[in-house]
Image (cartoon, rainbow, N blue to C red; front, side, top):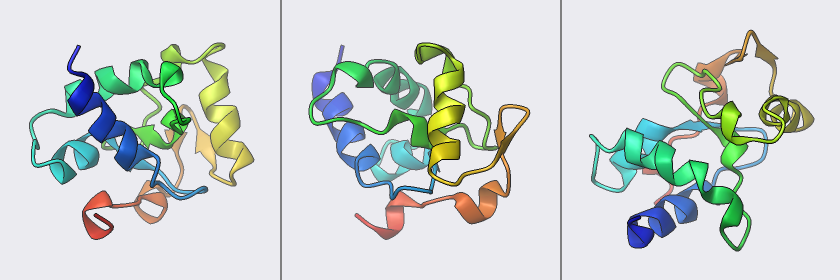
Length: 108
């Protein structure tokens, strides 16, 4: 496990504002590692053990799908957390993903 890369992923994920989402690929690109979106996803699967807390529910795939939901217990928790922040989800996908998207490249 590459803890240094994971910590960098977590630092960016912690910057995602409440009520917004970003993608695995956007985080990878912001770290200068555009082809590492799968590694970002892998890092997010371990985010529950990170301190301080990582809002892993705000990280989705490039089309807004909640592909990481199976790392939540129960899997429905990811959608519940997003809805609690005012993000509409339909059929496991963020509605209006383009407007909900937070680009880390603009903030780091």
